[in-house]
Length: 241
Image 1 (cartoon, rainbow, N blue to C red):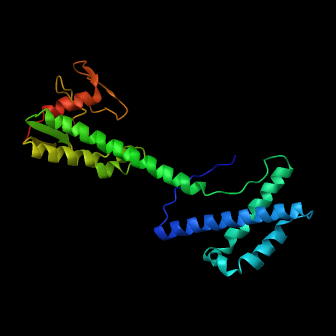
Image 2: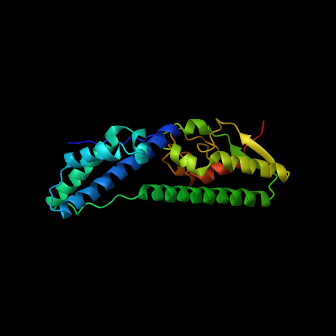
Image 3: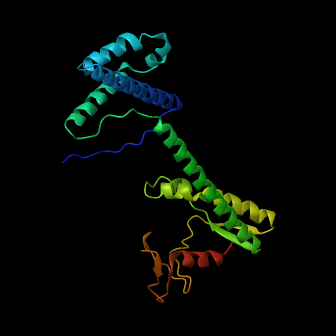
């Protein structure tokens, strides 16, 4: 069995620049080699990886117009010719189509991904603004929120991405300043207040409540209620010391 391990890279700005330079140089070498390969074929010759790579190293790399090729490792362009040779071998074995010239699609794709993330971020911020604005317009005399340990929750690999996307900090910041602006009392419940575990009907505490239990079932009075709704009722009844 062959197992694959996915690793997320977090390069520095300098490393990221070097990576894109390497990609650009590899693309240039590949396209140059492909053009030269086609040229030799049309002239009735028999191209080879070694000959084309040698010509590239002796002419192009020593040309002052292409001095930027020396800003990256020599292995970058050498591997480009390996890839080109494999592409032709696969073509002759009818495993793939004829090799094509490489494009700068990775740059276009990166721009598209950044644009999508920006749109998603704007949608989330707009939703938070509308939700907090709607709460403030109700003019309650008090708003009570749990004092969640967000930094601790971010350490949970199963929750961190979701928490980051939901922008908890931003939601708290907006609701807090809007309450202050509208003269509404803002209260933060004690971090260890078990709002989810307490029955909002009889007040008993369900110690074995798990995170995956989305419906709260009271063992004492038999109340069945949505977990989040039960917690919100308890927060509404929260007694300020």
